[in-house]
Image (cartoon, rainbow, N blue to C red; front, side):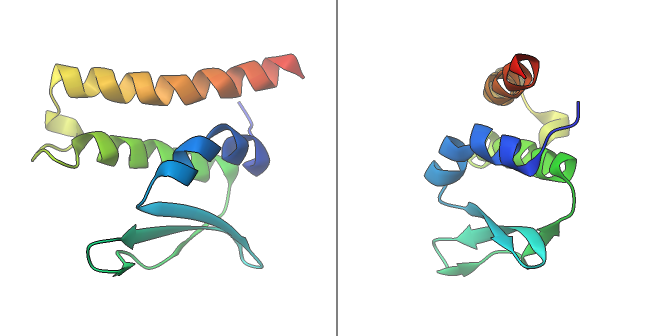
Length: 105
């Protein structure tokens, strides 16, 4: 489906607000995702300009994967069944909200 930046940001607003590692900002260059490392007190990566809503959605899904796997030595390819279930549940929650929003219009 085609989402707007606003729909994605509104849907993930709680996740973005509560996440201590990322923020999404609207700049004159477009939306930017910032990755912050609280332990270092600095940005972990160079700010990334997000060009499409689909790219923003993918970035947020990847953040969820990293959140679930951050205290493990796993990446997505070798995640356990329990980790994959948690990732699916978290991303599914937001995707359900997005789909309901689109179908309500």
